[in-house]
Image (cartoon, rainbow, N blue to C red; front, side):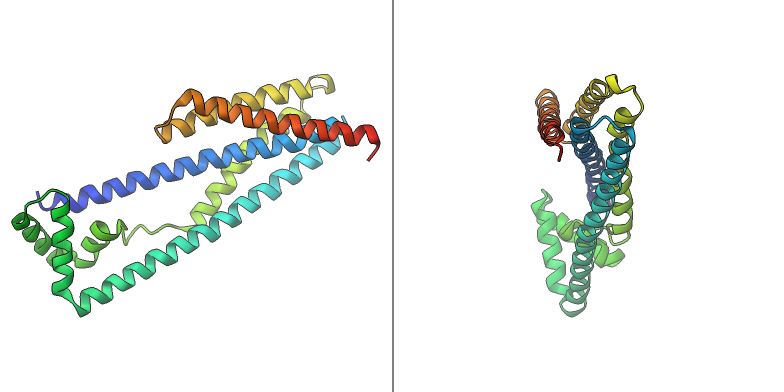
Length: 237
C-alpha cells in the first residue's frame, strides 16, 4: 500500500499533463481557424483576387504560428525554470533538515487519508528509496524525470495553429470565386464545432454550450472582418 502512493500521484500528474497538452493543441488549432478565417474573409470582402487571398492567408498562417510557438516557448521555459528551482530548494532542505522534511512528508501523506502510523512508515520507506522523488511527487506534484519541455510546447503550438489555419486558407483559394465565401464560412463553422466539442470533452464542460460559443465567436469574427473589408474595398482603400 505504501508503494502505491507515489505511483498514483505520478500517474495523476501524467494524466493531467496529457490533458493539458491536448487542450492546448485544441485551442491552438481553434486560434488558427478563427484568426486566419477572419483575415482571409476580410480580404475577400475587399477583393476576389486569388493571389491576394493566398498571400494574406499565408502571411497570417506564418505570423500566427510563429507567434504561438514563441509565446508557448517563453511560457513553458518560465514554468520549467520554476520547477527546477523548486526541486533545487527541496534538495537543499532534504540535505540541511532531513528530519523536518520527513515529518512534512508524513503530514502530507496523513492529509491524504492515511493513519499517522501508516503515514510515518510510508514516509520513511519513500525517503529511503528516493527522498527527492517522494517530495517532488507528493509535495510539489513534479516528476523530476519529466519536466516540461519548452521546445515540445513550441512545436506543438506551431503545428496546431498551422493545421487549424490551413482549413480557411484552402477553403478561400481553392473553390471558384462564387463559392469561396460560403465554402469558407461553412468549413470554418464545422471546424469550430469540432474544436468546441473537443475542448468541452477534455475539460468536462457542457458540450452544447461550448460548441455554440465557439461557433458564435467565429461567425462574429468573420462578419466583422468581412464588413470591414467590404467597406475598405468600396472606398478604394
